[in-house]
Length: 494
Image (spheres, rainbow, N blue to C red):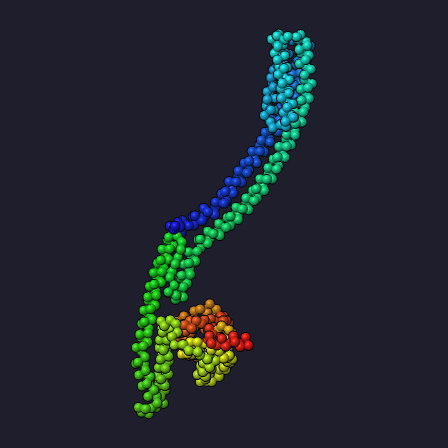
């Protein structure tokens, strides 16, 4: 099943904000719910406290008023006192009914129910007195009603004590609930924060992933890699940009191939007339066609030197194009790298002696498997660069060593070095470093590009070891010849 993807990058951003905000919204809702619950309990406690305190005080006062008016009735016999006593009785019963709605303890509630039963009997007596339907004498009925107030006052006192216990219990319960709510809120807050951080990380990855893919693709194109397809996964509009970038890659690849073909064709076509020009200039310079005066000799010398330089440039262009088109090495053989480097160094003798440059070479005898001509070209270009940029009385050196699997070589010079930030650019075709100390001979800018291409064909690598420092130090690795590797292992075993 194909996953649903946002149509645009903006939709993905909005989805990210909504997703990240979700834990915060849930946390806010749970916080408000907890606060509402604790607040409700607090309001209930306050309401019970206010109602209980007020009603218990009024109950005691109402009982005293009822008892006082009933005693006055017993003394005076006036009906208005009896009516007032009945009114107080009704108010007191109403208070008792309200007090039954409070969360009282069971013993207190039983006392309250017993008090209501007593008062029901008392109410019957009072109504009978009011209607003159009492069965016994009125004095005995009134005395019995007055006598019941002692028990009622005691019950009212126990009710007030029970109410205080109820308030203490509710306050304790409120404290406990508040603490539990605080702990729950802290735990939920930590969980929601962690969830938010995780979601932020996930959404940041999802938002940056297509951008990183585009950045890597653009960097590969900028570095001249036109063979790796551009694959971008993400919102549909970003994928559309990736497809257009892949189309651009194919177009640049086609143009690069056309450029190589053009350079190879032009270079090949230039070799034949250039060879004729060089031969003619050499014949003139050697005086084969007649003696030359001093000024004519200088002109022919300039012609010969520049035709040699032009021929080297054309051969470099041809070699570079052949290296890029050729793929893997075809003609391979076991090559003694120590012998090959010494041969290349000897070939630089004329240029070195003329400028008083010292050679510092320490080589271990190692064997690699590859194309002798290409390996020779690699070290010719490296030594040529070293001598070219090395000042008079400077040093050009080489170190060669190996382990059980690979060969390591360092070629260095005491020239101005490579500026920081250009350690990759120097391997691009026709790129030349701008330094304050210019080389004696202007190069073509293809030497290091050819070195990297040839090393790549031999499964080797090259990199600059000291960017931004005086003197260039190039590190080279090559796979050790299998036969040579076996010899090393056997010697080690012995």
